[in-house]
Amino acid sequence: MPAILSDSPSAILVVGPSWVGDMVMAQTLFSELRRQYPDCAIDVLAPAWCRPLLSRMPEVREALSLPFDHGDLKLGERHALGKSLRGQYQHSYVLPNSLKSALVPWSAKIPRRIGWRGEMRYGLLNDVRKLDKEGHPLMVQRFVALALPPEAPAPKLDTITAPHLEVSEDSLQDAIATHGLDTQRPVLGLCPGAEFGPSKRWPEHHYAAVAQHWIEHGGQVWIFGSGKDQPVADTIVEMLENSADEHAVVLAGNTSLEQAVDLLSATTAVVSNDSGLMHIAAALKRPLVAVYGSTSPGFTPPLGDRVAVVRLGLECSPCFERECPLGHLNCLRQLPPSQVIDALQQLESADA
Image (cartoon, rainbow, N blue to C red):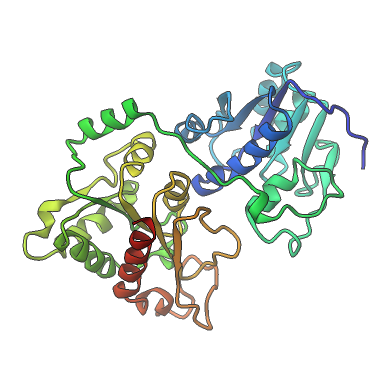
């Protein structure tokens, strides 16, 4: 293991992950770096879509857009980008495990380049850590551990600063006005999509049952997601009965990520699949019911004091497959809406 080259960096470059949930969880590393180096500037190199998240993280000075599509190698372009950053940073933390993710810090000649051992990155990184997966079962532990000495024990979850996105009142009011919304009735945010695949998606009719219950008790429902989730959101609204659809708004496919973050901050509570929006809701400190099926909260749980995880824990789950290998998706189909409604009511009682 090479000697530590700089104990007090004035600027740090973090090469961030490319998934929404992972980027939210990466804030745990930014918080630890800010704790260790209060006066240090922290910049994050990541895809351009990450800017709405990073701009809401107080630890981050600047989000630097990575001008490549996910999966692009583009060695020459990465080298040129690294050269343009020379002399600006003393430490770099590389969160993805790919070889290409380590190229920019190496080309930038950043003195200390830290990351977990991945795709043959010796030389590109000069502080390469060997990951003990059993000792670091949570992704946030793996992120935070990179800021600690190599021999340090895995950070305990209760010592890690949970993600905490900050939304300004002006940007929130702009988003509310843009979409013609109001908050006179309590807002239940629904996040029925999952970029990973259908094995993470609680069925639409279950979401509709939860929405129906919430609306009948005086609330309204905002349905979040990307354009891919719009058909699912429309189906949920179509399933509502007794004019309940008058109090349901489909935001999926109609908002930017920036607006989605701001509007989620205005919700009374959120129900979500295991998805990036789930982590955003937790980081906004919203009361959250997280529905798990094919995946496990044992690796990337939503972090917060107002979170309830609901799952059946069948023998066949978690399988971590994009589609149910048995063809029945019982881990989600058999999870009744009443279980989620009960969890919402318990969170509401805890807040009272």
